[in-house]
Amino acid sequence: MSRFDKFFAGFSFRDSTPDYAPGDVIEVMVTGEDSGTAVARIGDSTLRVEDAPDDAVNTRVLVAVDTWDEADHRGTGTYRETVGESAF
Image (cartoon, rainbow, N blue to C red; front, top):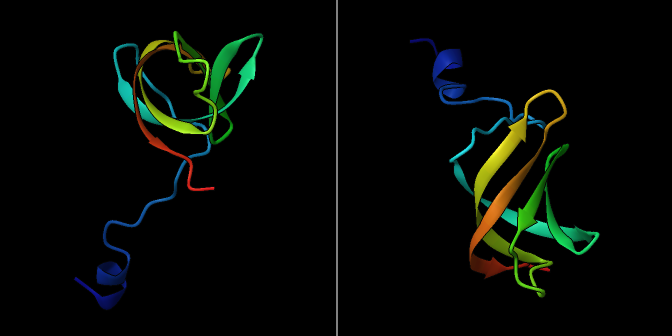
């Protein structure tokens, strides 16, 4: 393995439009609300979080993905639990 290969081992670019499958459980930051529903933005993707508590904005939560549209990078998920707060 060359020095170049060793230096870049495990290196990858982060995608601004990740894809998820129904059933995936992910940790997201709730960044806002839309019509009373919590919304998490993951890069350029949007996930509506159903059943989130009223004070969910600016908290990290676990969400079970219910639907995901790979073409539009939008989906819905169900709130599982709050795992942290914003660092701001």
